Structure formats: C-alpha cells, structure tokens
Length: 397
Ligand code: C5P
View 1: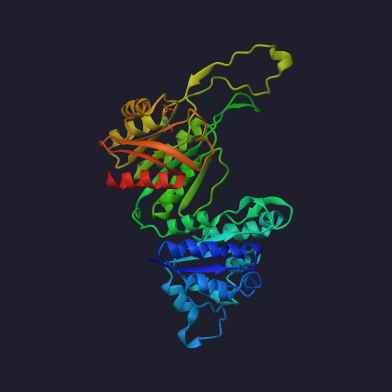
View 2: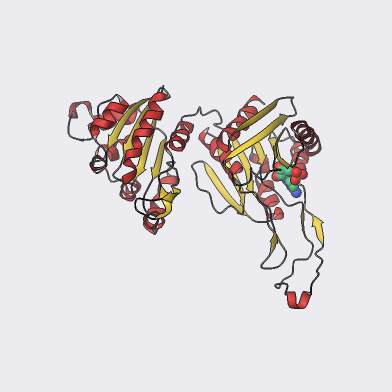
C-alpha cells in the first residue's frame, strides 16, 4: 500500500480525478487529494472526500499546528497532479508556492507525475513547452496529453490521458529502484539510408518499444543513453538522448558508449543495406528515365560486432537483440528466435511476429523472450509491461 497525494487543478478534466481516485483506492493505495481553489469550481470537495475516504482541506492556513504541507510531502510515496493546468505548470517550474498543493510539491522528495490538460494552442505555447522542459529536467515525469476531443466542439492535442494510463504510469514510478548503478544503452526507431538529398530507404519502426524500455529502465533507477533513429527527441528523467539517422551514425553512437555500459538493448530496426553511392543531387525522373538501378551494400551488423568487442575486451555488458519476424506459427517464431540468438551471439533475443502489421506504432506487443541461459518467456501486454519483463530477465541474468 502506497501513500499517494493527488493534486487536482482547475481545468474541465478535473472531474476525471474521480476515476483516478477509484483506480488507486481499488488497487489498495491510500489517497490524499489536494485540489486547488479553482479545481473546486469544477468538482466538489465532498465528492473527493467520499471517494478517497480521506478529508479534503486545501487551505494552507487551517490545521497549521500539524504543518500540513510538510507532513503531506514527507509521508507521500508518490505525488500525481491530474489534470495540470498551464498556470500550475508555470507555478511549479518557477517555484511559486501560494497554496497547499504548490507548497507540498516544493517540499516532497517523492516521485512526481504531472498530467497536463489544456487547449492545443496553450499546450504548444512556447511558455508552456519551456515550463515542461524545465520540469522534465528536474526529474518530474510529464505524461504528455492525448489528441482528441477537447472541451468544445474542437479536437486536438491537449486531452487528459485516460485515468487507467495515468494510474499505470504513476504506479510505474513507484517501482523498486532495482537498476540503480546500471547504465543502459538502448537503441530505438528505424534507420534511414539516404538515396539522394530527398529520398531514403526506411522502415515502419515507431521506436515505441525502445522508448518504453528506456523509460522503464530509468524509472527503475538506471542511467539510460537512448540512441534514437528518426524518432524526434525524447526527454525523460535519467535519460540522455542521442539523435541519429542512418546505420553508421547509430553504430558510432553505440561504440562511443560501449565500454561504460552494463547492458546494450538494440530495439532499433537497422537497415541491413545502404546505397553505395548517394546521389549528391535529387534524381530527376526526366533524366533517369523509366527504370533505374540503385546498388546497395551491406551495413555493419552493429549488434553482432558489439558482441564480438564485448567478448574480446572482457566488458561486463549484457546484450539484447530484437527480431521482427514474419513467422507462420508460434513454433516457427521460436525457431527463428533461437537461430537469431545463436547467430548474433547476444545474451537475450526478443522476437515478435510482425506478419499482420499490428506491432508497428501500436502500444501493445506480443513477444517471445529467449535467453542464452535457457530462460524462455512469452509476453503479450502493453509495451511498458513488455519492457519491464525484459528488464526482469536482465536482473535475473
Ligand atoms: O538480423 P536482423 O536485422 O533481424 O536483427 C535484428 C537485430 O539486430 C536488432 O536487435 C537490430 O537492432 C540489430 N541489427 C544491427 N545491425 C544491423 C541490423 C540489425 O545491430 N545491421
């Protein structure tokens, strides 16, 4: 049972706090709700009290002798703020502490999850984005808003994520810090091999599974270097992000980190081939005609060469490879996975069947995890749960 402080600020999504309280109490946690004065315009203190089974008194100047904000801050195992308004993000980023919630947040050392919700324009406003970046750099986890229906007839980015997602993410922050002292290098996304200044050879990898592993490892206390191939920029606490585009850039980034890491997790879909001579100018159809040939040469196998270096240099680094396969059956997938585990020489191989195209870009995954040591585990769950299952195996190893 964890003691959780739930801050609720004044936005239309404040009513969703009821579902968050329900999910947390049903999971056996104790919830203390701190609404702001503006949140109480949207939802009543009586509702929050009844659902949380705890009194709700957001006034900083009542019950002064118990020094409420410090007691709440010190007792909390976890603090969630949902929904968080733009104004709240600004206050927290600048350290303004005018009410009980602000003061509690400044005083706590517990992990903090903030789930902003507001109109799209307000979310993308440079001030809001700067505040989010500041909070992220201070180890506060920001759960990005969803895209969808907003308050009025309009739709866009800014919707509060579903209560189930908020609760799952928040409880993830409570996880045991069993990876403290570990440094993971995780690759994610898909490489792009240039053909000319406009075109490239790419693949459908969204990077979601790799990002999920990076965040899960960081939540469990690891220092993470996330090497992202064409997935934009990810900012999360304990995660250093390195952006790359093609296979050779990815190889350089991996090699630069290899001697200081305890695990290398290669989720990135790396192009096996690149264009031998990249055209410096755009290839024009009028000049090239109706048929062109592009000569491809093999890229280095980064995972296999890393395994070779780890063995040669006696480095203490576990290696995890991924294999996206189009398998005819479960036993076919197992055979392909076992073969790849051997051929790459890695410690763990995670295989998924991408035949029906359901994996790319999805939040769910269905994988078979095989380890050289004989461990075999099939997991069908969210990409975050799959991430934690892989990390559990690394701990066992
Ligand atoms: O051989 P295949 O591409 O199926 O292997 C996939 C695994 O190998 C992934 O972990 C991927 O990141 C890694 N890989 C690599 N270098 C390549 C191709 C794949 O490290 N050139």
